[in-house]
Length: 446
Image (cartoon, rainbow, N blue to C red; front, side, top):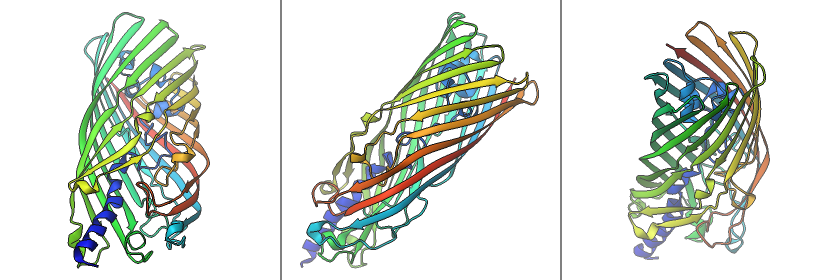
């Protein structure tokens, strides 16, 4: 085999590996919320499974993440800081991987029991509201609304479909609200969002290009980051002193992740055939529309509800552009829009102590036909409890606990050596997942 022929084959193998550049969009563990959303932006809201947050039912500045008009409920100035400890279990069971039938159908060696692929995390959020007067409020929030990490380990049998995935976002939103009259308040803000992604996977170069399965793996590591912007809009309607209805919209944020793709695992004599090079991929976080209701039954007891729609169908495909145009690639995804339904209640034991509870259903964004080991998600069922206690006239602390039940799910992928997935092998795996979330929050009013 001539050196040029070998180089051409290496570059072709790189195309399969480089396709992962765009995958950080879907890479993080999707067991927290549909797709790769992080709902953990308010501990007082978590106590009711986020029921009523669009209508300000949680009673503090953290509601502005869900609806900027809820700042109109704040008297004076307020600072809220939250921290949510997210303990995720996503275990792989009965994983099996073989090469394509046309390559002999042999078993792919490696670890079939990678254990817990998810990574626990602490999700912080911060809020500040300044009252210019009783009607006009200014605010600023800092959040991480999208992300998480999965890691199967370098030697797992599905490594050709993905090894490690990491997406982090940092969102800063200056916000304003104005009370038009006692019944109507409107609000809006500008999202300024930074996204950073890193992903790795292996390519079975030996099987697909040299005719010797398993003799040479090429691992790709891709990174990229970008700043993007969007907006939020909201309205709060108060037909009576005991009833509130909230409407909100959080726009999509478009990113062009720019970074590099690098390759390891090649003999030193061949490493120059795949130099580190620039790569670019478009990523759009979805837009969200929601409606919330808060209803006081008595002066101590309130019930609330929220319905949220997320436009995950924006994620139809992954397009990757690499400095070498021969490595550009496309993968179809075809995600579906999702709905989140929540019901909750709160009860004031006395002027200082408030108890909360809630349940929710969160629809998954991926059907079995499009489920991959990077996105082994499923529908989720939330059960939450929480409490708020006023320590002083100006300081309140809140705590919440949620358990998220996730039905068992599976991945079944078939490799017929066609399309972008060619050469990655057949893969079957079952998943058992669950989540526990413990949140703490401090609220300072002045």
